[in-house]
Length: 99
Image (spheres, rainbow, N blue to C red):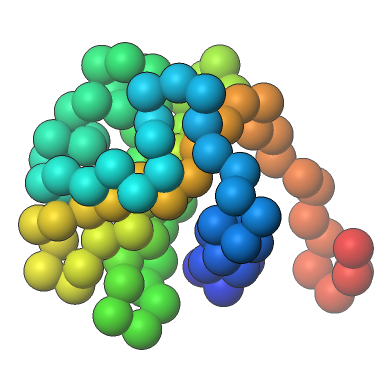
């Protein structure tokens, strides 16, 4: 899952897709400040996370379908919003079946 999130973030960065709302790509702050902002403004909470090399990745989701991808260093203090959007939905996954 983490590799997919990293790949998604890199693709979004490469083609320049950003937010039209308050979640500007590359907005950096303390991890706690970003967590609080995403909770208060978008009702998003961490639903997925993983480690990729020196980065911790977190995917924040809301019940309304908004989402934000956050990267942070291993020390967990500084975090940056990499991408975000609307209409997040789960894709059914069946082990052994390629999509």
